[in-house]
Image 1 (tube, rainbow, N blue to C red):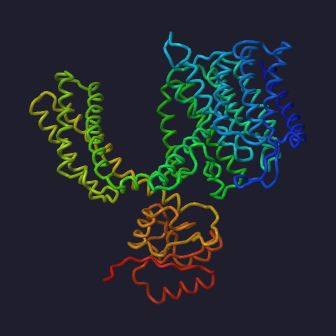
Image 2: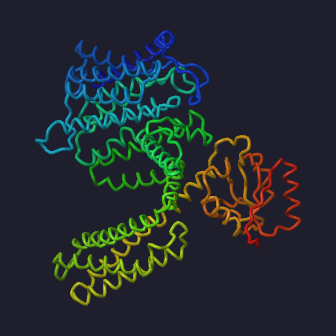
Image 3: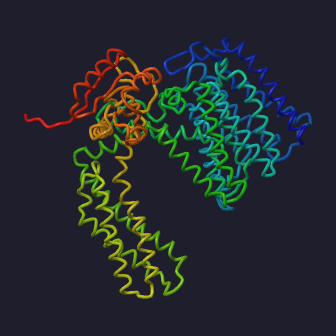
Length: 624
């Protein structure tokens, strides 16, 4: 089997190397050249025929091996699977050919995306494994089509950087092949490795600086192949496999798709709320994809591709752990995904966070929305209180060691907790407070009154059911913790969104344009410096174009090395020459109430010496 695998992969690699060179020569005659443009990174026309070379290499190796008897026709490695794949992928190749030549409308492309898996399914039905035995195959068909369409678009959207889409596809193919071998599916593993060999042959000419591109035909082909080959490769491992398979196959491209939908959806809402003309929909192109952001942050094409491929490997590893070692590894995977998600939201989703914060802020301010928001929050709080009590009761039912375990008692506890919790929120006037400007005192008051409601519930419950004192105490503590988290979440969500948005905006590394503020430092890590950060958090994202705060400087040495919010206190004024040389410092924001003459003279000298701009940030009250 090893020799069979090696020969097939090497042959696919060699064919891809040769076909890519041939197609690069004939691409101009076919009209398959990617011309430079506003949304393009390259500066000269480049052939868009890599997908055709990959497609032909894969089909020739598998068909030739089956015809010559070198490959054993078992499982997916059969004429049945190959004919279905060839027919379905041919639909995409034809659509991709015309799209690469002159462009197709999004709806025509979507029709091709649906037709391709339909053809495949009719010739080679697939059982997804989501539904019980006896359910109609139409259910499997619908899920399969959605799965294929999502993956096709995911890889199509991520294809915007030299070596990126091909590299991610190679990572997915190799990872899935290893998974297939671990599950005893050498047929699926061989298909994946042959495709991986063809993609590696293409990458020889696609790495930066690229001499050939996949084209839409190629990116759609990759998504289609991985979607059709992945299910059998990992086996049908019930819920764990169904949930984790998309992450393993296309974690980074799917993340890019989710961010695109989030970003474009919130952008449309903002335009609608402002009464502006709605420009662009969910399918409209933009320059905020993951690779664009990393490029804007100062990365080269090569480094950005390596970073995203590294993230893809990490996600695939985390997803495969429960599949290989059982559900006992699910907790480790979950923790890993949460860490990656938090890091990703903080560093990669700044545009989406800013748009979401703007939508929420505008929705609250719109006329007539105040009462509706209060009503929504009122019913939300009721659901949270009921959910907190119910969750505590569900957990507690497995821990009752004495006393009456009648569920009626737990239901009564939940009802009492909801009633007293609602009264506490009413006393606090929680639905009349301006939570978009919430302070620590507001949040502490909210927690105090919820604690009072929980203790009152505990008192009533233990007076009636004396034998359930410890159970009631555990129920009280769990209900209080769950209720605090749920009730506080929407009240702090907008402030958190603003905080993340400001932090991401002030750390952006995109080169400053003419008229932009550029990199600056804030002189003064005191109250005025904090006030400045609060102001930036509440201001529109384009209020200070190009502003990037490197950190604070302060003459008090005890503060050096510490942090104010997320920004570091770098040192004193003597650090300015180094910041100019290493960070391209363009200005200093003075955030001190009453600067003395000596300090102002120092700033003037630094401004003259290093061509810096000096800004003054202050707050005060003036009589009109």
